[in-house]
Length: 434
Image 1 (cartoon, rainbow, N blue to C red):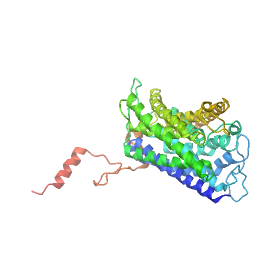
Image 2 (tube, helix red, strand yellow; image 1 turned 180 degrees about the vertical axis):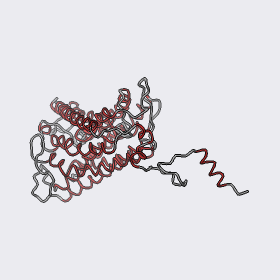
Image 3 (cartoon, rainbow, N blue to C red; image 1 turned 135 degrees about the horizontal axis):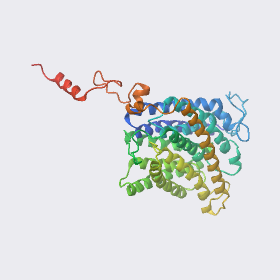
Image 4 (cartoon, rainbow, N blue to C red; image 1 turned 30 degrees about the vertical axis):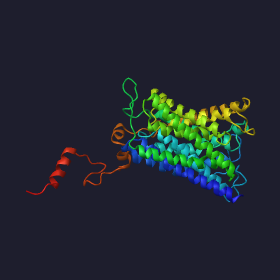
């Protein structure tokens, strides 16, 4: 084992772990103030649940020995007796930690799409099952020695394995959950429901952008400085291009340089280049990111038109961006070992392998997550009561506020006040005695 490789993979894993702070800030910023505590709780619990689910079963399904799924290494002891398909240069514990924070990312993507109207308990059960049994099976097909890897499918850091799995799961969740109350008019037109804090959303985006330099270069799984630098460069250029083209597209279509679209354009560029960051050169990365930035704007608008309410644009960023970026490997790859893309003199073999992977992962994820959502809906229920949605999930489910008005005595999460009477009493209290 190589200690330098191990340290690099762990540092990358720490960066990816920090991305969950970015997801929490982004999602809460795009949500309304009255649901902030609930959104933060989902993101915190998601990491905890994913850690346990991936340890119990997920890591074994993903990297255990087996054809369609892994069948060894459940509840691992990491004492050398567990049987895994892991790189020889890394201890299994390092790979576990790195892949565990990836698995949590897939579930976090779902959180944003179903925000502001899902029951906390239902989301916890779904996230646990997703990381326990759905995500790792797909991961085995691609990264654990499964059939897609054997067929030549290339997804270096997870445009499909992580992002489109999260995106497909989000899509089925939004379908079963329904839109937020008041999102659509009686004639079907979408109403804008602005987020409460664009500073939080922008800060979250920058944390995610930083974390992606662990997400993509860390997937090299060794400390090859030249490869790490090249992957980091491609990653950054795609993000930059996605932000610029999303800004221009929003300016033209929406008549304003919408900041939320710029943020999602950057994220779409990052998602799209994740599959091919190891085999696409910087110019190709700029092209892929630029197209992803345009696509995400139109995807957000299209998803709104079909009444799929996604408060943060997770489906547009992670599903659309993930599928698009995965397919683009078949056009832009410059690596002869992986296969040259069509734009670099290659044949159609790599492109066909990419399409096969997109279809297999999409079909499996939609089927399994739809079954999970349907079962939850028919048993514990997945949507909060209309009254709870109206007053906000912070008070309804958590009995607390993200921004309590503690400067005024007597005001609390359950308190209701006549604002005029309160103002009058404060004026009276401040007035000098006669």
